Image (cartoon, rainbow, N blue to C red; front, side, top):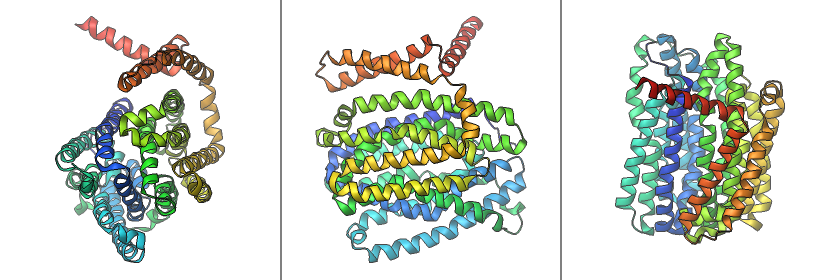
Length: 489
């Protein structure tokens, strides 16, 4: 295959740009939408999105994850790659038809769904768009430049559409459609771009059997993971009201962006790790695994601490004073950044490459059950805060189970990391920020900017002073490259 495979560093940079764009664009659209639509209408849209996630899950089966591994293994062979894509796409299309049948049955048989039929029908477009997008193929081929720029283009389009067409609360249906455009419409381009890499004319008769078992194992895992991302909002909608859904969505929206940033390296490394294991390159695999855990710790801990300390200020600045009540919910949900960072790394870099997806399935289903049970007891009494706490416990459970089963790979990697340096840097940084907070800055924007600059600036300077290996090596690499560029000039 003639497709150029970039370095891990290049792919990480591309994925980091994509993640940062996922941070920047919500900073534009989220405050605008929450203020224009209000808590109730915004909660209504969020409820519709959470419900449709289940039907997208059914249509996808376990292909989004399995497809990356399956295609990455055969990406050097055009014929095998085309055959694999053809078989997975046909399975995906059959599942999509089943999903739409179940969707329309549910729409007319569940009163809560029928009351929100307009929102649900609009969001149902994402089912077919996700299917034809074959995102897993481009991830397997490490086409992160294409993925990044395509997503940024449609995010820009969605921002323009939102500013032009969403003017008042009654425009909530238009907002729902724009959200679909932002998240899924770019998949139309994927369908046409796919033919650059595959040729079904070269393929033979489809053989679905080898794919079915792993696909359904991944599907079972995805179903449980979907509980974490959708069940809370769905149960809040049934057990409380749209206001609580709106508050909860506000508290987790920023968390989801930060999780994407922390998971960005793991997402990039899944195809590369699968490739290394397939080729028997154990040393390269082990080195990347160690760096991955170091990256997770260095990044996730400060993000968690900062946004717990300034949760209320962030919510008021981004969404308005109506969302200040979500402060406790946001504080409770933020530690999941660390849990998800670890569990996603274990999953994508140990379990899936080593064909142990059944362990992931077990872990997430146990956690899903924990989440469901806790939600039943906590949501009626504590609303959004109860849902956040339930999610935190569930994510910690998933991380602990996966950690136990992968401990032989994880512990040697963690021994190379000086965690005490990271924790020490955070502790000192918190003291510095405490004294800065005594300045009593009245302007909220300036307050957050000052605190962010002081917090993260102090933290990373301390890591350099402590010579924390991961941070120090990156700094030296950048410094030497800059020095080399100046010399060449």
